[in-house]
Image: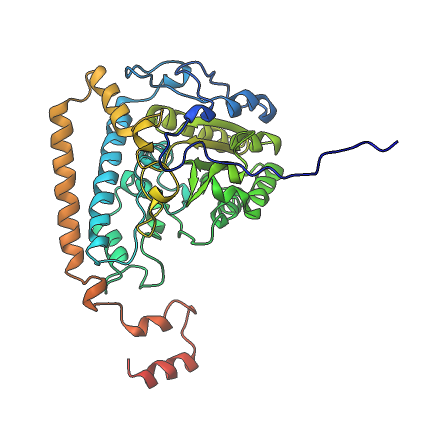
Length: 411
């Protein structure tokens, strides 16, 4: 007996907000602050399923720090985190202006995401290696990397530490545990896992921290990294920054509609957490928990950071073409800087006067570094690394045929 069926059809996820209409953020699956349990670090991965589905939050709307995850976070870390976040935002603002002035070709800011990189950087050791994407400059700010070097890289000038071989914002700072940023999405995940495995093979104590965006989880490298991390219990923290948008594509297109990205980690045998990425206290606490787990040979941890990309994807992007222009003001997890400020003021460790003074101090630091960097040239000035540098750093010792080619160019 033949049964009649409707024609087959595919489901194409749609964002919950488009230009001209207010976004419905109810899809975020929020959890009240302080309700998520903090498990022992030796928990079995399958037992973290509830933590991968819910949302670990510490700070409530009044600035109170609630729950088990709030315990043991030093005030000095909170103050350092505030400075790192402020410095990141000020730096971003000035570099966007510099790009508009045609001093550099390209820039990507981390507006709204400053807590994630700075919080994790402060939870790691300086010799742990981070494998970032292009929106974790807050790691560099938290680790006090000299701004002049970073800005020279942005300006592609004669003092560019990478000699013009990378796009602006794709920094590489080995001494600060900041691995070369890759323009090919998701490569840093397998690189981070591999580095962590190498550290274990050598009998070292350093761990790795790898970063990826929600859109890049659709890349095959993401799944390969999870397999190797799980099988070999690599000492690595696998960070998925779910800022809701992969350039102009909503996170549901990458698979975030009917499940969470953290849930994929549990399915692969990896302890996983879903965390409020705009809550600095929660970021630090979750990162410290994952780092301790890795250091004790208990295996990797995957963390989905729920946040929002408040600005454009890059200076080449206009987000008003694909989402409401005022989305950021309605995002229910708020501004990470404002939330930490509210908490610090509440516990008597910050004030409006100190906030203004620190902001002015950091602004002056960034301005001074920018002026110094611009002395070595900007994009429009023609002060670029010598053409001779194209022959360098290819071989340990330059072979004769390259020496001859360099001589023929007269450089």
